[in-house]
Structure formats: structure tokens, C-alpha cells
Length: 428
Image (cartoon, rainbow, N blue to C red; front, side):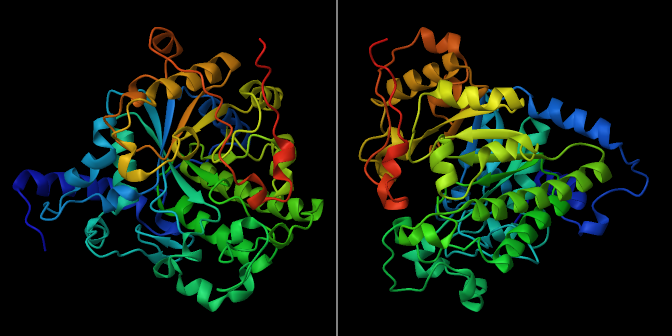
């Protein structure tokens, strides 16, 4: 047990009280006297919430739990200081918090998923007798007028080559996976451990994970991160065609989640949004089973972020896709795409690349996006969190043009994936 000062004890007690709702069971989430809102008023509130000002969305992959230095006191202040508390006063209006990405393995307490307990990482311990990492981020964010979404990496496959992340559920359900260790798949980046969304049991598992968070935590929304990693149906792995039938399976999952979040929203009296991060190409997205147009036509998503490993088209195209459906659109600036020869160990020391971030952010703003989404850049003191959210500031700063399509690998994920790239007209 760690030592706490009187002040820390009182603060923990306040957090615990605030988290009593957050960490309760589904049936205990809302006060009995909460008056359910009408469907029409909730939809109006959802649309309003979707268009909330978000200058910058920061995606936190949950690695802050592993940024603890030896000997640091086991206190929430230390955990929050790694990536969260210094964001106060920055341009970050929303945090998409991942609680570590590998499928079904998370440090937040859940009866549905497995608890990630890594050697030398103690934040999960603090959740055994009080609010856990996710509840703490939510409480802190709301205190400082920042939204907090839980971000689920829909098929994070680090366990394809890191056995320590391979969960018991995957061991018990091999029929729900793309393959087995030792398989050589011509496409899908050989991520044999990926969940096969063509199997109903797999989609049921994903739904239960999302429902568990939605009904036990006071999140402002759920993010489906479809770019980590972009493989969902077995035909993609073999270089065959992912069909409309496959797309309909994924759309059905989103439809099911939307119904669930609307029920949660009605009960708690405020909306729960659905965000997605997807390839910024309708064709590539559909090639891996994501029917973006159908999702927007059916009002299944509230926020769309485009981009990740690859940037397929000029930002104007993504804006033109989303605006007719009244879906706010965000440009994802990802370190693995923007920083040449990306290495996490040297990332935060890299200042020469900042003008490139600035230039692409400004081009995205001028294309009409609603905000900037930062992926894989985590230093909360980083200047980009205080610059990229304001186009007027960016106009007065040093910028460097560099069209960051991606490195090699498009065809590694999807057969002939490079055919979906539409380069900008550089003559303008």
C-alpha cells in the first residue's frame, strides 16, 4: 500500500466519489431519479455535441502507465503528469484515451476484458481500491472542460509478434482469428492474430467490450479506431475481395452500437457520441470492409477522422465527403507518417520536423476540416499542442511543405492498395 498525504487522501476520496457512478455496474450507472430525455431532444443534443469546438484531439495510446520512473510515488498526480495535466491551457479540447491498444487487454477494470499488468507499471494498482486509469482521465478531463472518449483499437495486432500480449480469450477462440502463429499471409501485413470480423462471435465480443465501457464510465463518446490495424476480414489476408456482404457485417455492428449508446444516452440524459478513425479514401476503406458512405447515410457516426499510416487524397476530398452528411471531419496527423524514419526513442527530440506538422495542419484547416487529430505524439509540453489548433497562429510560423503520403506498405495491407492514392495538383 502506498503512502498518502492528508491532502492526497481527501483528493482521492473526492475522485472516488465522483467515480462511484463511473465504475458502477450497468444497472447502477445512473441515479434512479434521472428523467429520460426524448429521442428527438437527445438527437438534437447529439448533433450539437458532435459540432463542439475541438481545435485539437489528442489520441493517448495509454502508454502513460508505462512512463513511470523507478521510485516515483504511486500517486495519480505522477500518472497524470506524464501526458495529461500539462495539457491544461493548451489547444487540446478533447482526449481520445486508449488504455493501451492490444485487443481485449486493458489496464482499466472490467469483467469483460483482461487486466494489463506489466512489470514496473503501477497505475493499474491504484484502480484496485478506487478509480482506475480511465476513470481518472475522465474525471480530470471533465474538471478542466475537456472531452474524454474511450478509444478502442479495433484490431491492434502487436500480439502477432509480441506473445506477452496474446490474451486468453484469443487462445480460447482461435476460430475468431485470421490464422495462427507461423502462418504466412500474403496481405494484411501478415497480422495472423487479427480478429476476423466475419465471425459473429468476434463481433459479439467487440460489442460487449464497447458496451462495458459505455455503461460503466462517464465517457463523452466511443472511438472506433479502424486504422490500428487496418485488417478486418479474412479475404483481405489472402489478397481476395472483401465484399459488400462483409461491409454490411461491419455496418451492422455500428448499427448495434448506435442503438446501445442511444439507450445509454437516454438514461443518463446526455448524448454519447460515436467517432471513427478511418482511411481517408472511400475506396480503400471499402476494400477492407468499411462502408463510410453507408455509415453517414444511416447516421451511425458523429465524428470522422481520416488518415493514419497513409494519407490517400487531398484533405478537401475528405471534407467534401463528410459535409453533406453534417459529420464533423478531422485530419489525422500521425507521427509514423509525418516523421521520416520514425523511431519513438528520438521522436520527442525531433524539432526540425515541427514546420512540416505546421504546414500540413494549416493545409488541412484551409481545406475546411473541423480540427486536427494528433496520433503517436505524446509529450504534453510539445509546442504542436499549442500551435496546430489555430490556423491564424500557424500562418505566422515557419512552415515546410512536404506531401506526406506514406512510406511503403500500402500493398502490404491490401492488394493493389496504392491504386486508391490521389495525389494533389502540385501546379496550383
